[in-house]
Image (cartoon, rainbow, N blue to C red; front, side):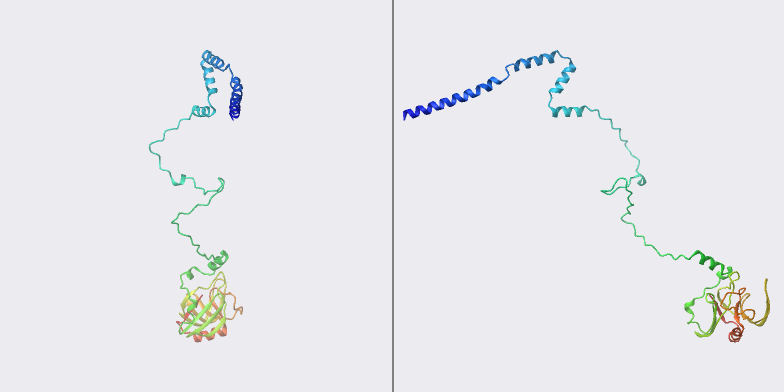
Length: 273
């Protein structure tokens, strides 16, 4: 047992010696001239000019520190003083705000205000120019001041009255809402249109000679005047009824004019539309 104890002590001593021997090369590998180099470096810095010292000191600084110093050494342009009172910015001079994600060159539609009312398009009925000109040419100036006939009230009228429909070139005699006569007629041509409105027969002549600038018609039968020189009468010089032919009067076939002359007394309403 004593021998084993001695053997363990000897092994422990050997291990300690081995560790000491392993540490010796580390101590020897250290640079023995480091203190001398440090002293020489200090002597060079003392002998060098101030500019060299600045370069050396800048080189010896850590990288992070040198970067911060470079940023701080860059001259910063002076900011002009802001005036105490700025003029009010006009709304028209303010640039329009672009929504997020839109490109700089894209044109954005104006955004209506929150309180803007929606605009509802109203239908506009536009009459063709040709129709307007034709309607204007078909009426003399006096016709615009005449009352406008309401077609919807035809069945409601009582008594005897006469209706002349220019668009159909037709005359209708009504009595208590019942049609008693209908016949094609010839009203005024485009340059001598028949007047429109609601009138009354104010004069009746069995025959009359009618003369004008380019016509002379003797013995015109069954003449019924309803407005100035406008009259309904029989026609013997043409039979082209249903087409505008006259100088403003309403031309009827002679037989129809005779029946109407006997049926309609003076004062009978005449509606031309």
